Length: 218
Ligand SMILES: N[C@@H](CCC(=O)N[C@@H](CS)C(=O)NCC(=O)O)C(=O)O
Image 1: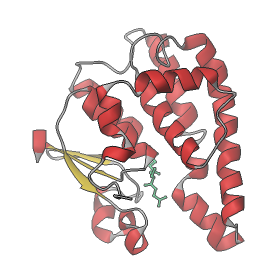
Image 2: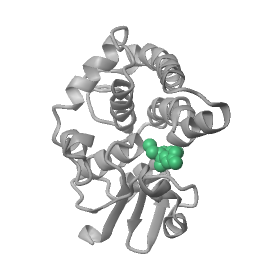
Image 3: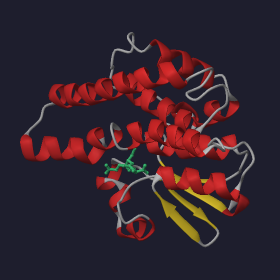
Image 4: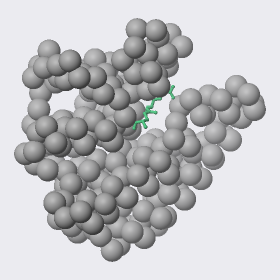
């Protein structure tokens, strides 16, 4: 166990990607434990994994004896335990603004288009691939329209001024998902600029879904 830290995660899961960026941004080493979300009915649904994460989701962080689920919680925990390269501003209102940017994605976009939601739409309501894609595109676009408007006021090089904050850790993975589901991004010029700036940084490159131990070769 590197640094007494294990991250259970999946290469293309956006919530896993958030946690990986936080770990690399803070220059922490960790053991990568892949949890395949599709194979075997989804390894996240196995009894053993549920003991770690009762919601059957990735990521889960194990730090020594401490077991934590929920990417927001993991990111805040890492920020408090490892204060180098902070992910939230000191000022209480600015901290809240960064959290707002995080939660717009964490609560306002991601859960509506999560794998289990899409599986339910298909299983119980016979949604086709095209309908599922349209659903995902609708919610990401709606959320990004709100986020783009806020970012026009808060962003500099990154989501909140010119330093990396937790808001970037939520935005970049959500854009990765948007691209995966072919959401047109032309109207989101601020978001596109921030993504370009973030992807130049080492932590974001290392955390990228293309560069993980469980990334398929093809
Ligand atoms: N709010 C949770 C959401 C975690 C989550 O839903 N992760 C997805 C992958 S991005 C997952 O594990 N899905 C499993 C499923 O839908 O069965 C967090 O931020 O950690």
